[in-house]
Structure formats: structure tokens, C-alpha cells
Image 1 (cartoon, rainbow, N blue to C red):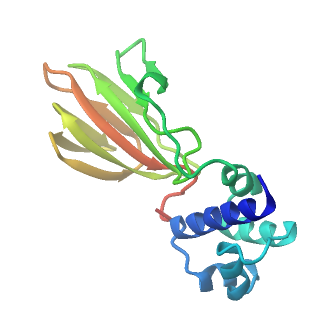
Image 2 (cartoon, helix red, strand yellow):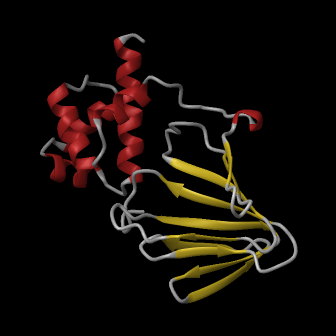
Amino acid sequence: MDQQKLDRAIGRRLKILRTQAGMTLNELASRSGVSRAMIGRVERAQSSATAALLNKLCAALDVSLSDVVALSEKPPERLTRLADQPQWRDPDSGYRRRHASPADAASGIEIIVVDLPAGARVAYSPWGRNAFTQQLLMLEGAVCVHIDAKAVRLRDGDCLDFDVMRSVTFENETKQDARYVIITRRGTSYGKM
């Protein structure tokens, strides 16, 4: 990749990361110690970023330099065909999980398609560190999501936004298999999403 194309890719990637973090140019400038004008020039590929400048921006965005440079070299569109999407099946519950998102998606969003057999129950312990929020969108059937002592029953089309700071259990109390989608954003701690 020539330098001009790389500068444009890095600029796009920095802007995406800044936007995902919910930061304005002014906020990133304040956190990084890099002027708003310089950040704008780098995002627009009007200036090449130095290692020192990228280091400051990455630290302020809480991402690695690899997150910016390595992903910048990839095309902005990534496709994962259904046949190539990794699938895993829990041998105990029969729970099936398909990772639909392309690997290293520039958006940082992960989309997981889950099939939960009738009567199955899958429990997760709370995340102590780097907890995140996620959304569950019901596609077919019904699922009861237990978040600590609270139970939330979901049916076709329902969408639940919740964190993983507490124990979470997914239970299919019905006699019909259930299918739902879990959507998360990698590298985003609870409270930043």
C-alpha cells in the first residue's frame, strides 16, 4: 500500500475509533495532548501521522497501534460467507453459536447467532474486568434471560440491552428451539457503549 493510501486508511480508522468512543475532536485533543487541528488533518489524510502522534491518539482512545495500522491496511468492506462463519456447539446443552461478523470488523461490532434448543439452559458468570453491554434480538421462539435474580422473557422481535457485570443465564423454557442474535462491540467497556 502506498503512503497516501495508508494515510487515508489510518485517518478513516482513527475517525471510526473516535466516533465509536463517543469523542469529539475537542475531547480527543484534550485527552491526547494533540491539537484538534492536527487530529483533523490526520483524519482527512492531509498530514501523515508520526509514531509519537499515533501513540498519543491510541492511548487516548484506549486501543493499540495495531488496531489502527493493521486494520487500516484492510479494505473497509469485509465479507464472511455463511459457509465460512465459525460455529461452535456446547456438548452439554446443545447450544449452538455462529460468529456471523467478519474477523476484525472495522466497526468493532460482533454479531453472534445463537440457537438454543428446547429446555436448554446456559449460564455465564459475571465479568469482573472489562465488562461490556450487549443486545439480544429474538428472531424465533422464546427465551428467558436471568440477570442475577431478575427474569426477562423475550419473544419474536423483542430486543434486550444488558450488561455482563452480573451473572446472566439464557434459558429456553419452551418445547420449541429458539434463535436469537447477540450484538456486542469489541473493546468497549461497560459505560462507554
